[in-house]
Image 1 (cartoon, rainbow, N blue to C red):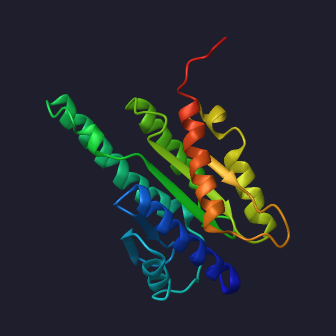
Image 2: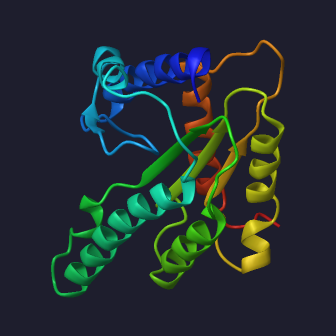
Length: 205
């Protein structure tokens, strides 16, 4: 991702930080695929833009590797909290907030994010954690056909084929000239959360 797409992603995330800060004092965390620099607890657009100014896009697209790193960190925290709750700390699990991972990409991954996602979903199932605990939203930026196909593969029956919960939503690029904005990202995040919450509702039939 470079040039206009890089700045488009930056500006959209800057807007999301402003929106998120209204509802969650923790703000948002921003990670990059090929740079260890991390922005934690960002709560305004200036902080996001300053972070982007400290790095630049380059290299391959190790989406699976980065997802594995972030998911493992979160799952260990979640499983430790469950163990603490079973040990008598009644509020341990409530202190671990549900998480949404928003992956903005302009190209297909150069590794294997599918196996990482399936393994994470399996651990969530084994721990009997709420369906809304973890969500991953993949958002395509730009018109790369390989990226669109990679998203299609991730979204089409991944949960059914592997017999695990569905924690993935994908949003391919849809129209020439359209642009990623904070508003569209907010709708994507809320849509993914609502979809998983809907699955918890009992059938009315």
